[in-house]
Length: 118
Image (cartoon, rainbow, N blue to C red):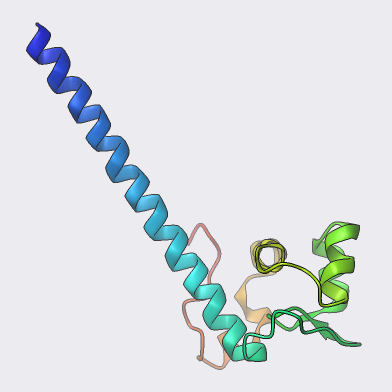
């Protein structure tokens, strides 16, 4: 009985380890996708801000205001948002509108751009 319990615990720990590795791999892949898009859209300018477009993803400012909290939108529109904040807002935008909002996706440069569930 004791051996069976030990084996069951080892199997549980191994399953958790494999799941954690899979999650980390998916996160790295997702992060690489956003890095690729930022490189294509703005040359990875994480401080990019302008009258029409802002963020490393070149999001239309009205979209930034729609998808972000007031504080985060303010930071993005002033070029002071963190990479993670910009990715979070872009994640919301892609979930709502899909990847076709980005020219680098529609022209085939960043074909891997997709919603999380796809």
